[in-house]
Image 1: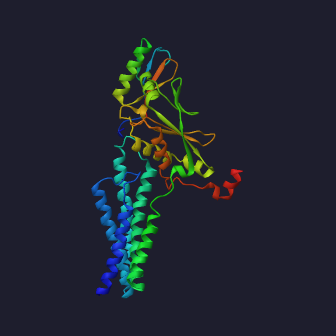
Image 2: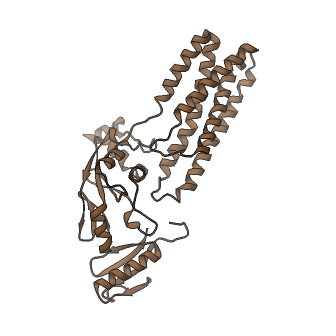
Image 3: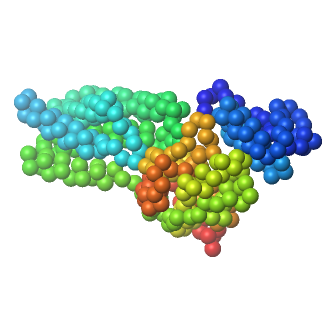
Length: 63
Length: 296
């Protein structure tokens, strides 16, 4: 919300580590339940939103 | 001299009364606080006094004194800047922002109302001077009615048809009608949205309405109005509940998605219907030759 907060992809939460590489923090989850939980915690901490890529990977984006 | 005093009083009274009647809390929700009222009433009083004093200045005749109206106009331009700045500063703290177009519209309205007040004061003083007390009062009543006709512009309901629409998920994709909005990842949020969200489809009645709805500022104004009237469950850490208005590029229809605090479909339709059309968003392509050719 504040102007000093940057927008963009802040993190990725994935079931398959081969799906994401690159410059964002990647959280590896063992199952879907854990992925939900990590995504929730990370998104709440960052005031950001969770989007589902529907390939086993969630990305956390601040708009 | 005493004669002129009455001229000035009549003009000032008519002007101030006009300002009071033009000031009210409406869908803009502004100014909703006592000090805002005081500022605007005081400025309205000054504007009407200036308008009223202009008549004795001409009658006397003291034509150079008349030029101070130009100075007054300069002052009132400052009001627009003041309003804009205040609203922009408050913008950050709204859960659902008004948008720059809406703010500009409000600021312009406040400036214009002061001119309206000045004109009302001037002409009622002039009427009193030329046609006596009955003339002054008659002119005052006419001008007040004239000024009030400026108060309400068109609203979305006048140019569009607003109908309730289902909010549903295609996989993780949130949709209202046939319009895709965004991907919502968390299952918990999807459940909340299924349970609490409301949607409406806004169908433009003609090509002009389609062009107006295409303006992003106008769409922000719709989302803002809906969230003010029905409340919103959005918070800084729940961006999923941000009201969104998205366009169907093929037909020009737009859909509104909102997670209101008060889930009431009829109230939502009413709120969208009553959203003012922003002056800056209002376009009439059908008034141009090229626009008419395109509409065929």
